[in-house]
Amino acid sequence: MRYLHSTPPFAALPDAQDTRDKPPPAPLLAAAVHAQSEGLLITGRRWGRNGLKIIFANESFCAMTGYTVSELRRKGQGAVHIEKAQLARMQRWAANPEPGSIYSGEGYLTRKDGGTLYAAWNYSPVSDEAGHVTHIVATYRDLTEKRRLQEALIHSQRLDAVGRLAGGVAHDFNNLLSVINGYCEILGSKRGIRRQAAHELEEIHQASQKAASLVRQLLAFSRRQAMNPKVVNLDQLVRDNAEILSRLLKPRKWLALDLDAGDGNVRVDPSQIQQVLLNLTINARDALDEGGRVVLSTSLRDVGPEMERRPQEMAPGRYVVLTVSDNGCGMDAETQAHLFEPFFTTKEQGKGTGLGLALVYGVVQQSGGFIFVRSAPGQGSTFEIFLPEVREPAQPVAAPLPSIPSTRGKETVMIVEDDDVVRKMVAGILTADGYQVIAERNAEEALHAARVLRHPIDLLITQIGPNPGNEGELLAAALHEIQPKLRVLGTCNPDCAPLGFLEPESQACLTKPFTLSALMKATRALLDHAPVHSPATSC
Image (cartoon, rainbow, N blue to C red; front, side, top):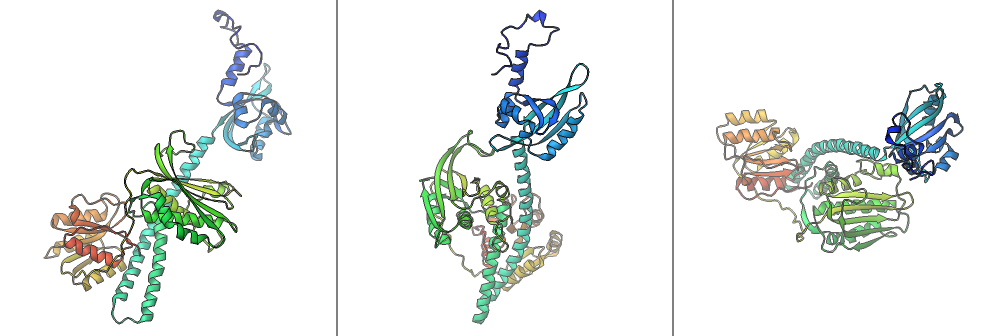
């Protein structure tokens, strides 16, 4: 600790009886000033070319800015205040500061090393016995971390709002895709269809698959994408996808693997992690010049409370880390601030949707993981994904292709769907397979139809929302009161919980957009009381 005089602060303190009417000695005052956690300046009264002339700075202010006291004396207050508007406001106040007044403000200051910090300050005039202002005392409080947390919160709220919007758009779009694919299936199954027409139907189907991929990215960002998690070995998952990823980089860019996670297993949806690998590799490729390199690496890391930049919600423990790095052009801080926002892209118009990294963010969050980015212009980029390690054996990843079943029946099926086109399509295909179909637009119409119906309803097909007490759940409960043997096939949000008033074998869920094959198979399985899985079928 430094003092204004060489005498230690308590070496010659007067007896307590003698200090009642005397000010504290200068060494004690100096020690108190330097012990303050807030920065403190004492400046002259006059405004010069470099702002107010600094006479004194305490240790906290020097640590805050990186300057020594002698450097601050030479440079003046303008050395740290970089915003001209700040200095202009201060100058107007300093021109005629009234005794007892305080000038407050906050903004960015510059450090000696070129970095910045965000601070709040209070300036107060000091007067002599005649009431004339002779000096100014200023206190500075470092708000950099508080500001960072506020910006992170605002960013999170903005992402959440956009996520809700994306989820709503995806819901409506899924209805359209269900119709497109349904009628493609119906037309494709008709006999005698011409080869050219069959080819054109296949083109429509392929286009709808691409559209469904965009929907999945929107849902992944909004964290509402259906997941089929499995315990997988991350090294093996990366290894299995290395060949197709390397093809994305050919002929003049290359992929390197450095897999060192060993037996580190994670619980994820393999298809979504494959999409994460694909999107990060494409992002890296687009940042590379000719002859660049992308490195995929894995490792096991123990995360403790001391980890730098560790989010509060990231529990200490063992994580399997996937790292994707490149030696490309890198990104500035402004780009990184918007990196995971949907539709944000630095590519020219028509070259990117801006959804790739939004999907990555959504999948990682939905998988219980965390993503970190390190980048600087001209220094490449590194994405690190931390996934909690699972101490369970890996499961096989194979997924069989769906087949179109023979599902004819005579039971009574009620469809409740507010989308006219979806309702008409589903009713049409069920009627064609022999079922007795009642199709209604909403719960009120459905309950009225059920009351006047002379025979029981065997199966209800309706949308079940994620929140308890949604219209679909209330309708199913009301019909179940009337007909205890009712079975329910929900076209559900991925976050839906099972219906508590139904046995597990009496309910199932299909995630939109579903194929008619999946719908017919689930219908027949429920009516036969066979076990029903909930396929998150894509278009």
